[in-house]
Amino acid sequence: MEGNRRNFLKSLAGLSSLAVAAVPGLSSASAKNAQIQDIRLSKNKSYVRLVFDMDKLADHSIFSLHKPERVVLDIKNASMPHGMVDQVQANSLIRSIRSGVRNGHDLRVVFDLSNNVTPRSFILAPSGKSGHRLVLDLHDKKLTTKAKTSNKRDVIIAIDAGHGGKDPGATGRAGTHEKRVTLQIAKRLEKTINQQRGMQAILVRKNDRYMRLRDRIQKAREHHADMMISLHADSFPDPRARGSSIYALSVDGASSETARMMAEKENAADLLFGDVNLAVEDQMVKEVLFDLSLTGTIESSLDIGSEILTQIKTVNRVHKKKVQQAGFAVLKAPNIPSILIETAFISNPREEKNLRSASHQQKVAKAITRGVNKYFSRKAPPGTWLAESQLEYRINENDNLASIASRHKVSESDLRTRNALYADNLIAGQVIKIPVG
Image (cartoon, rainbow, N blue to C red; front, top):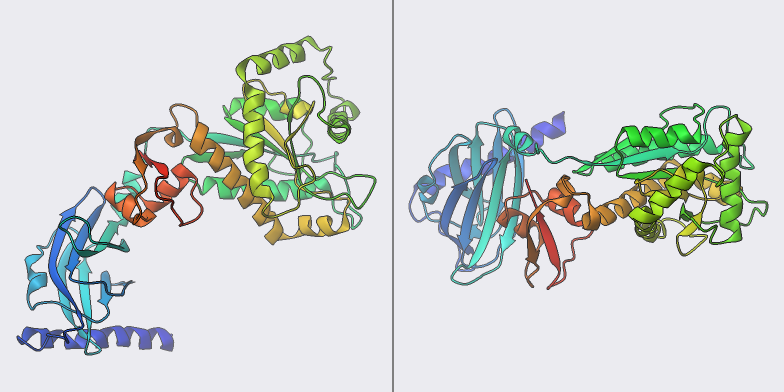
């Protein structure tokens, strides 16, 4: 409490020099200081933008104060002519602006606001007739929330936690049940996917209950899923076996003996607990497989699997370097690209320990989410927010995400999601899509 009080008093102390600015000449700084040459204001739907034209670069920082609402902008080694802030007219968001000298050589600008805002700032390098510019955006939180609504639907990802209830799945040496860790990872995956704009995850199994394979497929259909991810953590007779694997459906048979064995083991759960036999002789399955081969669902599944496998490699060793194919019954959903992820071998003591770890589960969930995002950034279904874009933009040498987002009046997070960008390094010549608001 005392620490907060001291911080608040420090911020007030910085404003004590505002009266000095009222005396002409006292606000002039050394010749080395950056000079604010002009301030320009523009209003957008959900935010107000202020552009400070400067004769050279200067470090800056921003922070917010509440009750009353204020945003404070500090520019190091900078000065501004007396009365310049007066040329910025008050509006529905900015009630008034004050400026003053801080620490004898820094400039502080205080914005008194009518609403709570999210402040964002960035620097623009000289371009054309414009010199160095410091851009400050004040995003009205109330209006920003309203602006994010869109009539474009989300892509739906069905997450199937393998096994459950009377079917525990595989069991590790320490007694860990597969059904338990798959549900834990599924819930973490649901949360990370739902944090991405334009995506919605649904859990096929929300608790510890047994579900027939056909019921899992049916639930994905009922939610009109665009993708289905089935999570597993299998075992192998040799405890040294380790690594993650990803499987897609195969019409012609398993791509490896291991894939065939695992498919037989997973499919046997329904036979053991009374579901119908999904053998190839079943006419409905024949029709489904025929439909899959026609629509390219398997090809899409392999594409999705490859994207996720690339991301999984960053958090765990992979057992198979390519997406495998086998006749998993849970993957036989018509027109829904589906993959099965063996997150690790629960029969391996080290991997069993990882599977029980909350931090490792979160790493796996984030890796899968990155793979899902990268796939849908390329092949999102028509009519979804991820499929829509206003234009394509080619990256210039001095571009950064913040400046691009501000220039096109979209949020930086939406720009990242639409283009599956997880790093700040942009490459000149790279083409990105500017999303619809």
